[in-house]
Length: 432
Ligand code: DLL
Image (cartoon, rainbow, N blue to C red; front, side, top):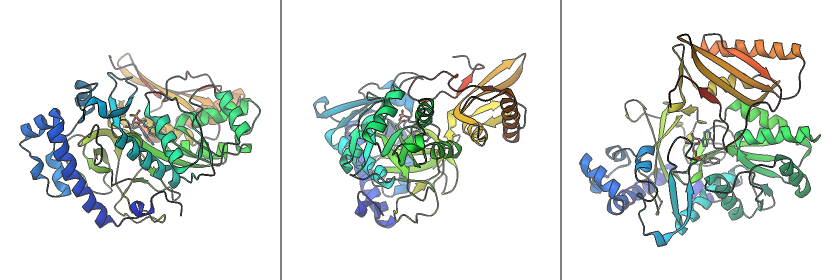
């Protein structure tokens, strides 16, 4: 089994937890003494770094939220003088002030290491030609993949995002074997190839690793089938490093989270209480080795659960979490029913003719909630086929939503694209 760092990736759980405790004590002390925010927060909560004696004691530390990071942006969370930093990244900031993260040389090293582990878990080797169709910029995606793939020794083609036809031409020209990216873009690239008269599966790409947004199993199946490649899921967020917190192995049964660098907890998003294994809730993460900008008990808002068993057929010992179901702040209440956009995506993806591009619009018409779902077909279809697909999708959504949505079937390429991540929800009821 291919592993980038066998010793660390197969470390017995007991040793991993001992290492986590040692690092947790260090990072709490380090954050308390170097980041005024943490000193203030912990003093207010009456906690001192000496109170951390077991891993469970992490619950004594107050949570850190996106708003805390924003209130202190751009540099208020840095634990080192500016001269120690060599790179900066930021979240897209579409929902407010961007969250800025600065990396020391050590932090870039750790990021490259966790990314190399994720990529090699997905099957990347030094023999691969690795195309990286993600925008190179303040978004963490491209650089994370770039550093990790280079650490493995693969040949990186830094194509960046956009110019989809050119991406396909380069793929063909260089014989790309492995690709990365934002989940929805892989489907878009496949569709672009089809429009150019090229079957994506006839290209040499045999493997892909995607993430950065909602990534349902239905979407994974569509990408797999379209490209005839293996598809891996990678998770991460700017506040931790970017991509590289976790990824799935060839067993495709949960994402291994690198416990030597991140401490994971699951909490009830409403009460903040810690939940046990197999209990679904919000993922809370603590960086255990970050030097430049340590983050303690960060509320990711991402909904998942941690597997009880740490045994995996791949031989890795690090805990696994389920694919992210959605974000707690993404949940919509439509006609009194709680709905995650991911559930709608699963319902749409079940249909052969539906492409991966879709949008849901929620509005209030004369005091009543109304849901309209727009779905592109993956190829041009006639009126009859479109009507059948429409009816089928209405039925699938009724099962989960217990009310009847309006479904509109659109030809390929009719929904707007733009931004790095796909926009799936427009809630016109929200006044913002
Ligand atoms: O999206 C980092 C990344 C880049 C991950 C490329 C994977 C691949 P942010 O822009 O800070 O960072 O957004 C982080 O994206 O809290 C999740 O809500 C969502 N997300 C990331 N990966 C996944 C995934 C990058 N595999 C936010 N499945 C996170 C579902 C994901 N959601």
